[in-house]
Every structure is written in structure tokens, then in C-alpha cells.
Length: 278
Image 1 (cartoon, rainbow, N blue to C red):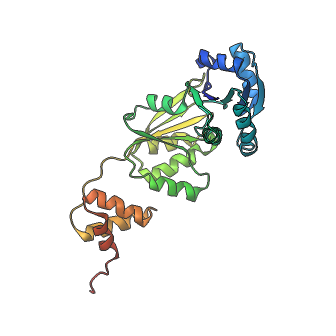
Image 2: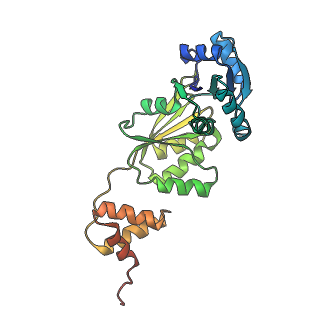
């Protein structure tokens, strides 16, 4: 069996009793950082019973086959990352897929989650949300990703490195508008936990002084768009505006068709039909 176990995102006493039990009884413990695992086990007063191996981004491909072999041989493999649930912006997905392909059972020990914790304290709508993980590091790629999300109606959750937080918030302000509501959650559950809420313009100004610690950003979804009139000229203008902001034409046509409540083919024809002379 493969067991994915959530580890504390801050305070060690947030760990569940099941996590301690799994650490003590698993045949193999695969850890993103074996030193952090040793520190966590000490904090929990647990002796890791099985053999410990490292499992991180740099060795996932090479180590996955041997871990699957161990499972097929009847061993219980426990996977833990530095914080939170394995495979959520952390190593784990590759191993889960390989285990399932091999017919191995996969289970989870639930626990702390930066995504859900930040969402809950953000003060933003929680009935529908999407998790976008880390944004691309390069500015152009980051801007294109955010442009694709400009009309996303659900609340969005992002992870970000502290030294890139100001740049990420600035790019969000440009893509979503300076008045879009957001929250920056820093060092969740830790001694210096801080949650900053406000429009993106204010958060950019706050981040200019530098940000430290683990960061999760929550951004409100786009407000409902005003319905477009049944006018091909208006459709063409709306598609052009979306393309200017970085939205691919195919996606822009789809969004305009949805807003105008007409088939995509009609908007496509309006965009590609030659305009009359004069």
C-alpha cells in the first residue's frame, strides 16, 4: 500500500495521531527532506520504524520504480513532504500514478492544508474556488497565465515564493485590475502568521517593503460580465480587446460567445468575415 500523509504547515502539534502512527509503523518512509522528517519525528516523540529514503523533485523519476517494487513485495510505503499534502505542488503525483498502474492501493492521512487554510481566513467567497499552484517564474509566461485567468469567476488560490510575491501581485494587478479583492497569507499557523486583505493595488504597495516566509495568495474571482448585445461589431471589438490583453483568439471567441449568449460559430464568422469597404 501507498499512504500519502499530510504534515503540519507550521505548528508540529497540528499533526494528527494517525500521522504519528504511520511514521512508527510504515515499512518505508519516503520523505521530501529527510532532515525535516527527523525533526518532525523528534517533535512528535515518534521513532520512525521503517527505512527512510529521500523522495524529491530531483530523484522522483529514478526512485519511483523501487518504491513501487517495495509495495508489490507487500511493504507499506508512507510518503511525506515538507509541509501539507503530498502531490499538491509537492512530490507525489508521479508515485501515485505508478502505484495505481501497478494495482497498488493508495490511501491518505488527511491533515493541514495551506490551500484550505488560506481560503478559509481570506474573507473571500469559498463556495467555488480553484487552485493554481505556483505561477511561472518568467514575467512573460506569468502574465500570459494570469491573462487566461482574468475572467475566471471562482476564487483563486496561488502559492508564491516570498522574494517573488511583489512581482506576482503586480502582475495580478495588471491582469485583474487594481480593485480586485485579494488576501496574502504569510506564515500560516506559525508564530508570525499574518493575513493582509485588500484590493490588489494596496497589497502591491505593502509587498514593496519585502515579504518573508511561506506565502499563499487568494484572489477573488472575476465579477459577472455584462451581457454583450447581439451585434457583430460589438463581438469583434470584445474579441480584439481580449486579444490585446493576451487572451488567445480561440479562447476570446469562446468567452465573447458565452457573454453574448450566441453560438461560437457566429462570433467566429463575425471576427473572420471581411469588413465591407469604406
